[in-house]
Image 1 (cartoon, rainbow, N blue to C red):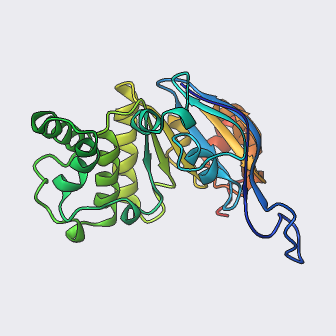
Image 2 (image 1 turned 180 degrees about the vertical axis):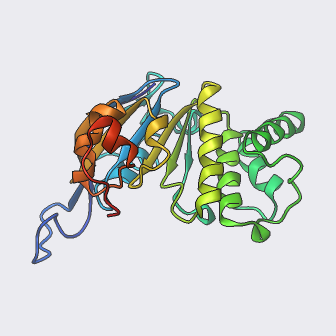
Length: 260
């Protein structure tokens, strides 16, 4: 369980809406958010660029420290045990190159478990299981710089899975992918969720992912303004500058899809 209570995050610089750039405490990126993510839940966090999505999910494992409020994972405050939080909450960044650190696929997936001080046998087991989960078995020796964008995304997911997290958080995982790669990543996330891993997908493009979700929260100006099951939330999501699938127009009565 991930639990946020009255979380607020600010950044230095211009305040939101301050045309003169006067610094009155910095931009509020996340504004008094209370949210819980249950074990095994598939949660979609939706919103336009600048809505606070990335900042919000990076508080889940201490990559961002809130200015106010508390974040806990499995009942333990993140600030008290960063290692436990980052083991329980695996993060896949929007740009895989930001987290791929080794020259080869196997080396990269092994990086996290190695830093936990695990035995060689356990590291090998985790690498094999993680690569199998993203359909990249026997690709350990492939060089990272030879991979396509979709393959790099899958390696990044495998690296997070090798930590055996309770929750896998993917921040805009489809941004650089063509349609076949997008479908491949969606299939992997669907399978992981079916096996019990909690999945959080941060996105402004809900095609293919909305039907997988148990729940959707929509952000605007750092606040949760929409929350609920996909069909109940769909009518209000298009107004947040996100792309809503046409299927939810007809089935759920959602507004017109937008490519914003």
